[in-house]
Image (cartoon, rainbow, N blue to C red):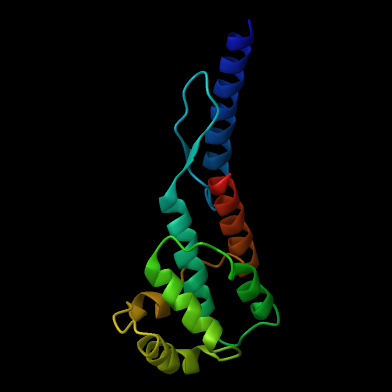
Length: 152
């Protein structure tokens, strides 16, 4: 009886998740995979986390004027384990250049990364205009929640 209930719960959860993502495709999902009919979700899709990291870094590189929340956002990401080494380099370069506007960052970030020993960062990717208008704060919250679930 217990196995049947667990199976029904897992099936219901999968159905609700599919309906929710169909209704709200703009909300990033952590990409829970690895379901079976008798177990709970176990793995988070690392591609979703990479995507969130990239979107956050692009938003930080393209801010026309640094917002008042930028120092808090950078501080909250300080302990994040970046999935892509290039993402870590871009983040470290951003934190080394606080309070700069995007026009200054375009000139100074590549030089900062080179001084750090990483001259081959794909800067056009980070400076490309973002089509994503999601709030930076919500992207950071989604990333940290995904990372927290992934580590537990």
